[in-house]
Image 1: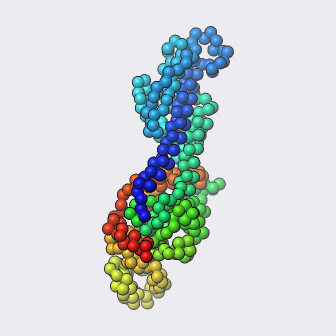
Image 2: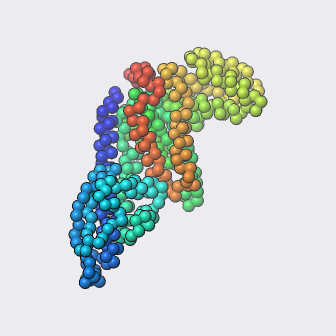
Image 3: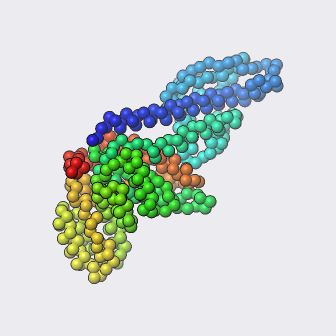
Length: 396
C-alpha cells in the first residue's frame, strides 16, 4: 500500500541528480564568463603574441565559494598583474550569486535560443563572451531536455490510484504554420488523496489512440490498478480506459452533460431545465438519481428529444454515487483537470504560439513538475475520510 517515505526518497534522489547537473554546468559557465571578461579587459586572448609588452597580463586566479540555488560552486576569479581588473559579473565580497542561473533556465523555457541568451547576458554585463558561452548554456538547457524525458519515463512508485482524470486542451504550436495541438493530460489522486500529474502527451488531435497510448505507457511504468476514471463524453473514451484497465469504472462528467443540455435548450427554458437536472446529480443514492432522471425526461423529452439521446445511456452517469459521500463533489465531474488546463493556459496567455513541440513539452513539463511538488503530501478534500472505503474497494 501507500508508502510516503519511498516516494519522498525517490523524489529527492531525482531532484539531487538534476541539481548536481545544473550546479556543474553553472560553475563551468561562470568561470568561462570571468575569463572572457579578463580577455576583454586586457584586449588580447591568452597566448596571443599581440599581448607581449602591453604592460599588463594575466596573473592566475584565486578561488572562492559561491552559494547558488543549486548549491555551492567554486569560482576561479582571474587576476591581472597590475591589480586593475574588476569583473562585472560578481559583486565583490558577495557570497550569493543573484538569480542568473534561474534566468537562464527561465529564458530557455520561454523558447529563447542559447545564442540569444548569451547575447542577453552580454548586454546585461557589458562585456564580450567567447563562442564557448552558448555551448555552455546549451549544456545547461540540455539538462532541461533530459528532465522532460525523465518526467515522461519515470517509474510510478504507487501501483494503485483511486481516481484518474482525463482531458485534452488545445494549444497553438508553430508547425510551418500555426496549428492547434491537443495536449492530453492524466491527473490522478492516490489512495491517500495526493494529486499527481501522471503524464501528458502532445498530439495533432484528440483521439482514443492518444489516450490509450498514455494509459498503456502509465501501466508499463508501474500503474497497475485504477478504481475510477473521470472524463467527458468523448466517444469511445470509456471503452479505451477499460481496455487498458479492465477493473476500472468510469464516470461521465456531469458538468459537460449540463453544458450539453444547456446548448440544446431554448433560452426561456434554460433555468427550469437546469434546475430540474440538478436534482438528478445531487441525489444521495443511485435509486433516487434514476427516479429524478426519469422525471426529468418525462418533463422535457417531447420538447427536446436530443436531450433524451444525451442521457439515454445511464451506465456511466451515477458511478460516483457508489463512492464515499466525502469525495463525490470531486469525482462527479472532471473540474479538477479542467482547472489545471485553465491555469496552464493563463500561464502561457502572453504567448501567441510555441515555436515547436519541444518548447511546449518543456513548458508543460515544468508546469506539471511544479504542480506535483506543490501538492506532494497534501490530501485532497474528502479523501482522508474515504481512505478505508477506497482501500476496501481495491481489496475486493
